[in-house]
Image (cartoon, rainbow, N blue to C red):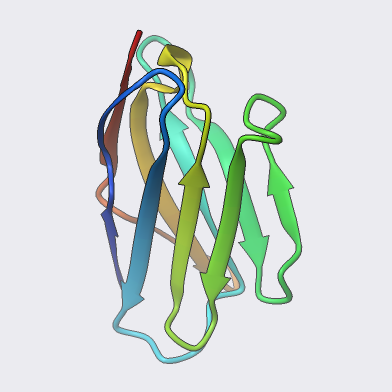
Length: 114
């Protein structure tokens, strides 16, 4: 299984970015898909996850600013991020689980300038 993430980049504070991730190498829909981020000097942090039924969970720090969505048939997950601020700067990784197996993408850099 491979996860390919895209959509990162440089944006000004208050701007928006949409991250996308596609899983390949497996036909069955992932149980859970989501995004983590690694910010400089901080531990890896869950940003948002969504299960195959559409139930979502968001970090408190992004609630109201971020929307996660997925396409079960395509095994893709998107993260729409709005009202970005410099504290959102970091490397964002998509993750997917099938049973007790978790896979992580290569990460995409998000940089928010003030």
